[in-house]
Length: 239
Image 1 (cartoon, rainbow, N blue to C red):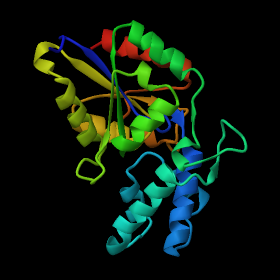
Image 2: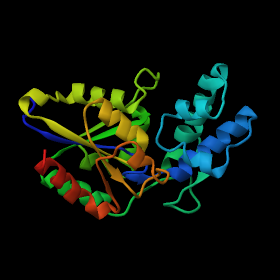
Image 3: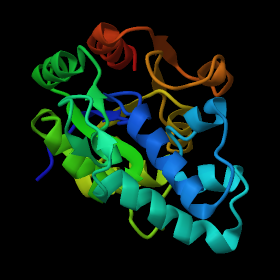
Image 4: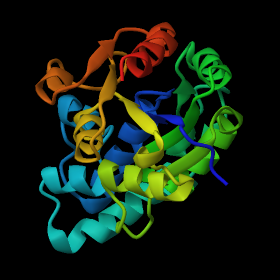
C-alpha cells in the first residue's frame, strides 16, 4: 500500500539525465536519408531532442502517409542497428540509444534525492520500452523508483499523458498530501507538467533553445547539475 504524503520528483531523460543528442541526431539523419528526403539543418536537428519523434517528423513536413514508416526507421536505428560509434567504448558499434552519456554529477544528485526521501520517477516522451534498457545500461535504474515513458503504439505520447500514467501507476493522491515537481529541459516538460497542475524546474545544461523555458513559464532554472538537490528541497519547502 502506498505511503502518503509523498513528494514525487519527475525526471525527464534526454537533456536532463543524459546527453543523448548524438544518438538521436544520427538516427534522425539515417531516417531522412532512408526516406529520400533532405536532411534538416543542424539547428532543426537539435529540435528533435525532447518532443515525441512523430511530432518532430510532422514539423519537418513528412507526409501523414509516411509517418508510421518513418517512425519505424528511426526506431530501428535508435534501438536496434549497431552502426554508430560508442562514445563510451571507442571502436565499439552501438545503436543510437547508446550514443549517450550520463551528465556529470547526475548520479550523485539522484543518490542525494533518494536519501532525502523523494520518490524519483523517470517521465519521458521516449517509449518506455526504450527508456528501460537505456536506464539499465547506464546504471540509472537502481537510482530511480520507477520508469515511465510513452507507449509503443503512440496512444500515450505527450508529457502530460506520461505524467498521468505515472501517477496512476504509483497511486499519486493529492488529497492525501502527495506533491510533485517536474525536472526537465524543454517546453514539452513545462507544458506537460502545467497540464497536470505541476511546476517545472528547468535544466540549463539540456537542449532548450535560448529563451524557450522562460517563454513557457518555467518555475525556476538551474544552471548546473550540482544545483538539483537544493532546487528540489527549496521547491518542496515552499509548497
